[in-house]
Image (cartoon, rainbow, N blue to C red; front, top):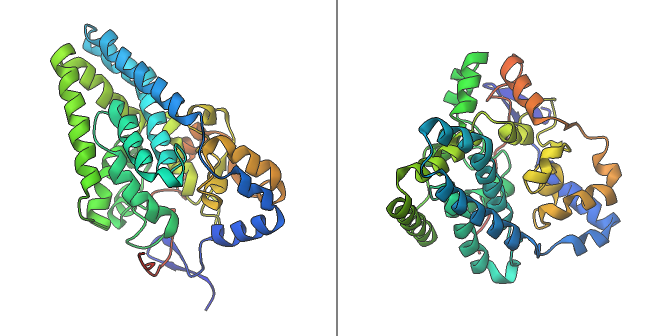
Length: 322
């Protein structure tokens, strides 16, 4: 029997994820890449500026009409909020304050979460570890759509609806696929988030709250930046389960587009991932990659060969906890 078979409509493989072996080879050939690991000294200041900008925006939108609330939520605030969720992604790898200050990273992620409007950072951290450790793991990697999503959202119109409601599926899927006990950090995250929401509501009313939450939902759904959700791991070419994107939107998304490089070296902050590609160019230049997240979304909707089922899955053994 070969290493690749078809079961249902997912692409089932019986090999380890490719990132582990490539990481070993690159580090053996280019040990200087280890110097790129460690905290990003600028991340905390960039995130603090973005959070401050959104709090200022809450004040500025409090008297706008509803149509302008939603316009600015989609065109401006949502872009910042989506960018903040990707900052939270980086912070989940301890790149804000380093591995020795893990608690500072968790607390700072809660601060970065504030403009998102709903508690997110602590739950993301809990499941994102599994996404790296068990990439494509059946019932472990909650980034993979469910069988229902793959079966139902199979036409252009349905795939368009799936993209629009992607934040809902992304939030609820873990509760169905791999439910975990609520942690103290999640309770703290929710307490801080809803407390700040109430303070904003008390001083400026409902519109700023709607501005924040609507921006988060709209820009994590059908929006050019959200193309990264599809670009990262949806199988546009057979045999390739992770893809990078080298287009201009990386400057707004903490280089999340350098996704092959990120999975190879998750402890390297986004700002240094282009250096990984430059140093180990022969490992990345010939791999398939994307140049446009808008094109990714277009192809996902209108290409009959691509849909929620276009993911690699594998069976993974649970790692022993320390």
